[in-house]
Amino acid sequence: MSKGNRAAALRAQGDLTGARDLQEQVLAVRRRLLGEEHPNTLTSMGNLAGTLWAQGDLAGARSLQERVLAARRRLLGDDHPDTLASMNSLAGTLSAQGDLAGARDLQEEVLAARRRLLGGEHPTTLGSMNSLAATLLDQGDLAGARDLQERVLAACRRLLGAEQRLDLCGFGALDLDAYRRARLPPSRVAARGRAVPADARRSSKTRSVSLR
Image (cartoon, rainbow, N blue to C red; front, top):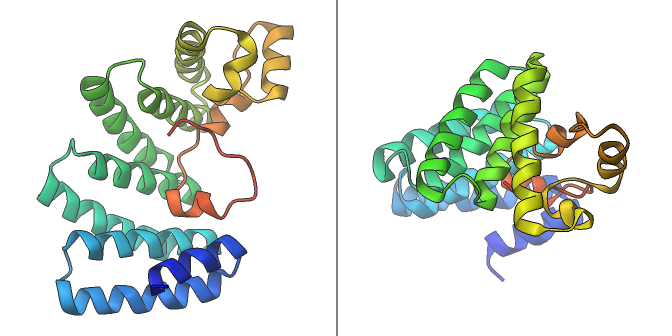
């Protein structure tokens, strides 16, 4: 088993320290053999950032994520899926650090690109709308958050049909119960769409939203 796979297995088992040690070894080797901006090196940096995030080292995670994003913007362009994923991960870290304005800027850029490239009702686009709604909610922009939530809900109901299946759009059982009672998008819906680094999500014990 490769060190990368062993690190992933340790992450799944909750051994973040062991996973971090292996990921740091893999990153050092790839930097030396492939260079700082090789796609595999950038992937290793992203994996390590996810583990740092899960350990609570947000500053360390942010530093790596900013380097990955800068490299991918330069090498792949702003609209490449990997670049957008890197923006989304960094936005999650900024939000966790309390930099809501920075997170919002990135999320708005991601959403605009995904609307243009994928369409307004693609699952990935809807996930980006949910993430932005969470940030607007944290900023106190309830009207803006509600507008996005209502659009996501309408699209999910139109695409998926029965109300019982709205959990596929990030509406859990409690959210649906609140929605049926109040006929308003519950504030908790946005929180389920919060952007969190993909590797940090893998070790989470809670159910993550199916849309990103």
